[in-house]
Image 1: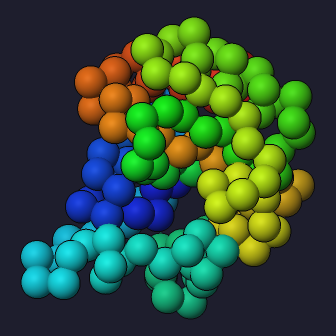
Image 2 (image 1 turned 120 degrees about the horizontal axis):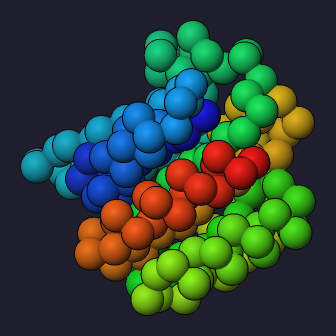
Length: 163
């Protein structure tokens, strides 16, 4: 399962990356939103915290919310130009993913287990979508989402495929 809850102009590039990644991984499911709002601003209008995303507010998410996916990867945009690998997955998995992304990209990638980008709250949708309650959240700086998107996708395909 590949997700991007804040696509469109909310966290630019994340929705497109999620769709592209899901198309490259046989049998993958994708859930992404694309928020646009010129008057207020897409971020202000369409950026609920990941732990506040409720299937009742998203009919397509509601249709898959109880499937219990074996692997769940959620892509997010990050203001700093780096990559943070979080979620409730095993710390060794976070470290391995961060190491692979660090080697594949020109910006630093590191695992994170606490703080606002850690994605460790059980109420975060990336975690409750996972059968074991442990999803993988990847926060992507602009370079990863734009200039090095192809390298990012190639590495993520290998990571998901290896999982």
